[in-house]
Length: 361
Ligand SMILES: *Cc1c(COP(=O)(O)O)cnc(C)c1O
Image 1 (cartoon, rainbow, N blue to C red):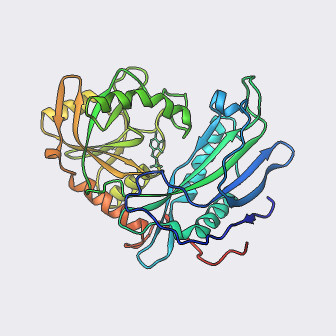
Image 2 (tube, rainbow, N blue to C red):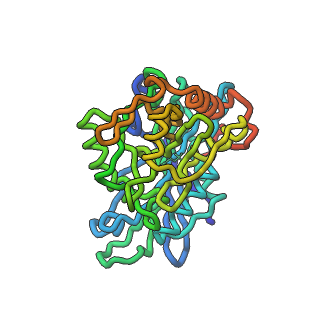
Image 3 (spheres, rainbow, N blue to C red):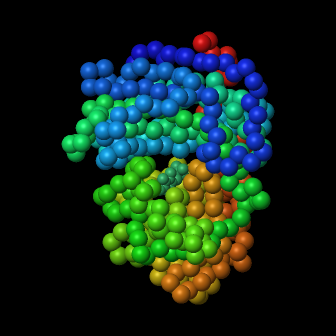
């Protein structure tokens, strides 16, 4: 790989972050970019000022969706260090998504280096109130102007940064979920396990209709029989039974979440009986009726943990744990939030620390 280039414009004014950051509305000054062609491979790596992309209207990703992305977060630790949570796992997953969509793989070590350089340069943008973070969005897309359906030969990768607010500005609150059986998100052997825009396009109408009925999100069932639990909104799902915490096993249509993996590890280390297996909606309902269902919660980088307070399936309205977060959901949220900022010791080596030295432009 060529040497990383820098074209940095120093700010003349101080960064003033609004009190309500929201999610993904505000962007930092600089972006990382590199390009791919078959002769040079990935080349031209540069950190530069954010500008509009110049995209030919024939670019393949616009027409046929050949694109993938990631989402991860950087934080300021309790003692002022810069931390990134599990970046190697996210970069590995980017390459896994790339394989399925015929996108050329990236050098994982180099991308981690470029990512930490970018975060270091933009570290003044990392918000520091509890729950706030700098969201990191790597994207790769096919650039060829061509309407023939085939993999592109040229690609662009960029990493965009966005300071984001706490997911729960009014505290850790359970959400209202509708079990969706009119639409499916993904099918086995399809794109479900890739982080690709197509899966999000497939989810929009179901989420919109659920919102119109007063729900926060939908619980997705499997694409074949609409019988087994898959995910909740854009998060993985865990079900707390009396003697077991279960999550759907990765069967090809489920996104292998990094938060999901962290939660499994934390639960195991706490001696919990955590399983990865098929969980049918009938089993959840039966457990609700016989009193052995405690709660459900979603896991993902954006919300960390999202407790489900109310679950509706057809005519059945279920209230879980009196509409309160379960002890386990609360524990996982606190523990992961503490790990992010190194308030507790990171014995797993999940956190990558970033040098905060001045980078020469
Ligand atoms: C990104 C994503 C998740 C959560 O993955 P994390 O690595 O935990 O952020 C879950 N489901 C879908 C569909 C996703 O796109």
